[in-house]
Length: 368
Image 1 (cartoon, rainbow, N blue to C red):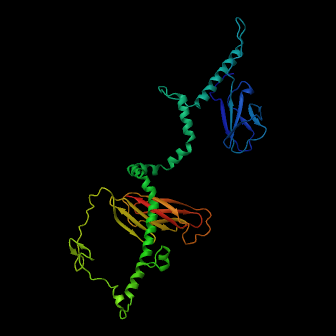
Image 2 (image 1 turned 180 degrees about the vertical axis):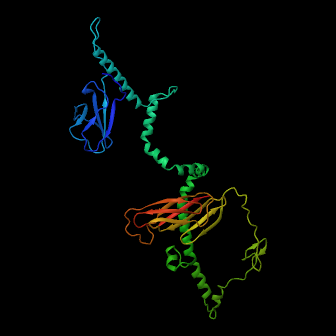
Image 3 (image 1 turned 90 degrees about the vertical axis):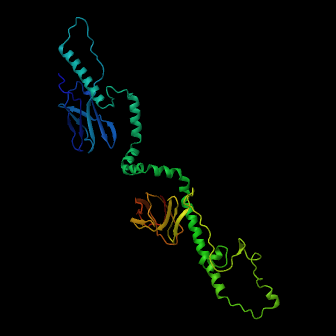
């Protein structure tokens, strides 16, 4: 026999019906044939077969879609004992050469599936294999990085802003609480200014400034029956410097305007509030160094929801959310909901809401 082909294995994809498969390479013994099956990512060896006219016949057809590999695996041994001056049949010598050739082909097939390094490489193959195993272990994370390549490039392009945010992470983390506190204080101030008696009394007061002003304007005091004792309660005569405050020995009473020098903050080293605005549902604070905090509320509907900032940022801002569980509006029966930022720009962002009715959400954006 000769070994005229370098092939030592053949692969098939089963259709669930066929049971007979051709073996297109020579072999010395039936025991040298092995059959492996890959089904649902599980590899097994099959032994339920026999030979018929040079073909392999399975007792039961492999399942549809199963991958079948028939391979020749020759033992790496030499069992012929050559003796001096003994007759050496040509068939014996040829068979041993055939087996040796098959062993070489077997080793080549295995080497072709192995990880190798270049001829001039100084890399230790064992170290290379270790690195490959590490990469295989984090293949899901690598896939995630590839899928988010555009976002990673955007982050790299704004690395200075990222470093600035990292350096101010404490302030950024405290910003939502400070904004909420500012909003609460603003709401209390609104109550003190023009709230109802019930609202003001809940804060420990009696009347709002508006009510006190109205009572003062509408007061109708009868002075006709004041006694001498009552007259003692009149304001004593106003005397400059005695019961009237003066500035540089000048009384504050009289017409005109007192001009006070304005503080120049143009060269201030610490940022200060430059502009601000607030209404019932949204507002912003912009510092002198350009750092801006904006906030607002949204009750998203399923799909894309565009939120426009009160004033534009000069750079892409950071955005955070919080669910208002105590908001007075009913949010219905919530089964599954999720909210993600679909896109963000300097002038607005788009919130993607999915699944069921959406709760009332507060958002906070901050940056330059």
